[in-house]
Length: 333
Image (cartoon, rainbow, N blue to C red):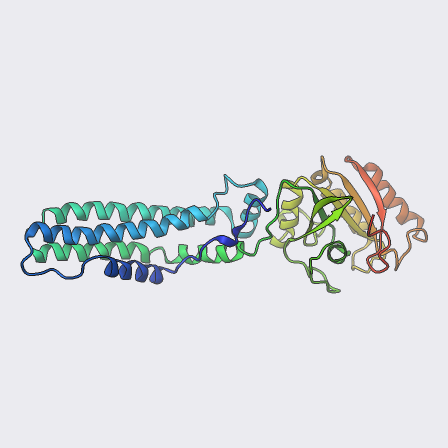
């Protein structure tokens, strides 16, 4: 079972929807008529009950939002870094902080207005104080319009994140775009990753599962990574970098020796060398892919030497595997 499943998070209402929910609930769940024979003490308690109920409803709704969204400091570093990549950690924390502040302000308003209603000297005074209390609470909720809208967008996106387990046996597929990672994923798992003859068909992480030697493996297909500096990498590429940095896994680095992917063998080797520090303490397999289009035996000696040197100079334990997704040669290995 996955450790984190964000699909169960409830929808975040917009500010107008939240105000409607609170006021309608207060209207339905509390008495609505002040009879002429009521004493002043009963009138005070009548309006105090409405203020308390409104404050409690707002607090419950905002608390649900705050508790269901994950705290970045408490979850696995992979998910914390992924949230930072996708949503920006500072914006995320700021939005949740604004909701928490709104909850505190509503509690303060209710406390102050209850004290004033407690000493109200007439029905009219108590009614005006109640209206003022509910109005001020609703104004605070209105001001959370942008924070609530942002959190709902984050929730929708988080519900589509792959439900992967960072602690289980994992195979991570990485390499330049269009080198055959998704095709391999579709061969060994039941996942149905879109495969197209152009770069960046895969724009997010995909998870599948397969059995190998009576053991269950989690297979993660990552978006393609381009060979440039970390600062120049976009959100799509950073998802792959985040997975490599934080997950304990075996890594399959795909190399397209036919160069049909649109990238030369030199650029593929250069990318391998630039992300090599991320392979530390991981079992690494360099997959020589598309041998149906360009057999490894007939590859130019200079290119073959380049691949062999890349494997030899690798600091972590590294093996070489020849494979073709079309002929399925080497796939079952």
